[in-house]
Image (cartoon, rainbow, N blue to C red; front, side, top):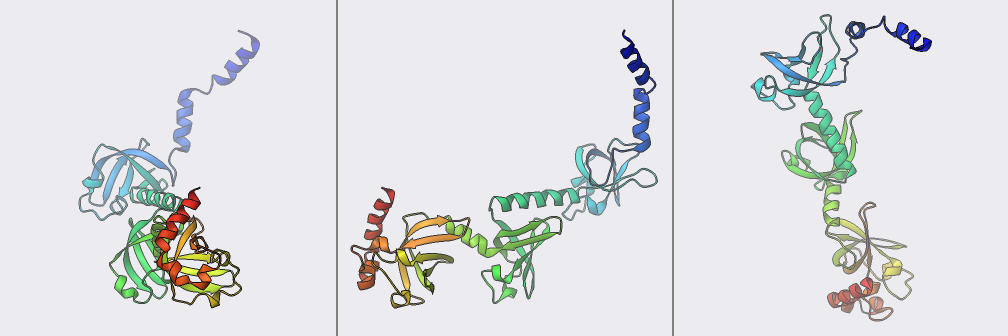
Length: 300
């Protein structure tokens, strides 16, 4: 053995594995608030349960931390001698006992699941619990959420929504400040968007006009008929061509669900430049046959 190895062995030998175990026991680094641990329930009490998590002393889970849902029998959610996951919610007390929770762990998992659903633009079912001036509060998988009035389909008689189940999308999912804001309108729009495709003939009503185009309501989804897509002939003023509330049929040119946009065209239905301006009724009446021809052009 060379001299370096001897020195190394001499330096290492005084600190044995027993010393290491004692050091760990002394400082007890293994259990801290916020840590997820595995353990087995070995005793049920009226106030909670005692859990073996491998420490010097047992851990305790209060009854109201056993589950997110209301329970009458603790053994339903805390079966004896089964390996379960727990969240440490309170550091060791004077006797070295930590306080655990299954309820908080469930809540954390729900927040993670809802954040993932928001990322994937998914919808969720919620039940309306209460109403206030700004909107409605809802229950969602055991959590409390809020839908602003402007994001409800029914905005006038909010009281009528109490107890109802609504399909909603997500506006904000923020675990750090307990903010869960939802939107019924996003869900409706998302459902409608899944029905749209390029080349499809749709029917709607003119809801607004700007110098650059006409806004058309497609059963709850707003679409834009750009001024250049009205006719093959130049138009200087859309108000001479359309009226608010006027029914309109058009072909979908583009669908962008991410930006919430549907682009329309009536230009593509014309048999000759300016037909939409000279004889719109005829274009609308034979829109199906014209749209079929347009679809063939779009697919070329």
